[in-house]
Amino acid sequence: MMRRVTGGRWPEIRAGEQLSCPEVGRLLQQFLDGELDRDSEISSLADHLEECKRCGLEADTYRKIKQALASRRAEVPPESVERLRQFGERLADS
Image (cartoon, rainbow, N blue to C red; front, top):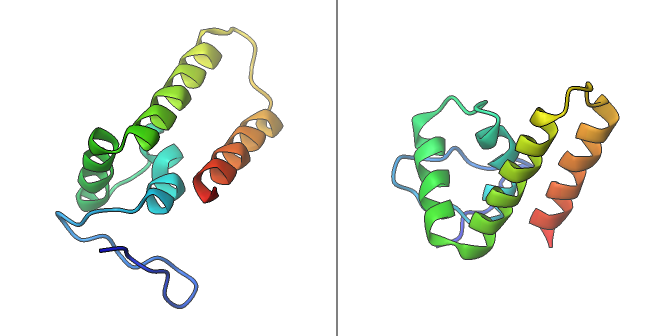
């Protein structure tokens, strides 16, 4: 069952609910940055990443990028981070 955007926003994720790939794409950066605070979102997203090869590979790619950036001593310009986020959003929308 695919969840749908209603009123211009995604409905709240309930415990045990399956997420669609676009929903995962919308939340992936927040998940990887530890910024999600609802257990239902975290659990549902983690379950999806385990089951969906495409989304799981995308998450692994982001993790590798984050690790590579973290290993650099230079500060990453905010513009670069924003471009990376936009790139991820475009991937999720395709």
